[in-house]
Image (cartoon, rainbow, N blue to C red; front, top):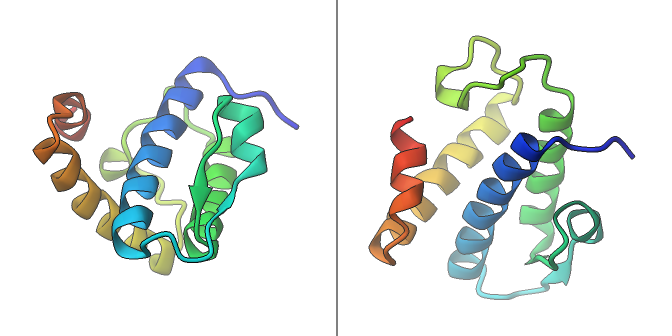
Length: 115
């Protein structure tokens, strides 16, 4: 397995947190299971439903293969590597989870959103 840099791990932690919040709120813990690959990469156990696990696996693969260094945020990227279906889903998740996290007091994600 390829190793991720510390910057890539930080990006993945942010993405995992957004998807986890979305999954817990929208799917309500139905058929959740731990993601073994993320446990190895990030060092903590993440429980997601099958749909969110598939999306996260896709995002993980795209992040691993990103040719840009340093990687800009996706909205500022000149290469849009996600296909339309996954890109729309990630947008939905970011909008939903971002609002929820800001309401919970996670202002560091607000900083991430603007920069």
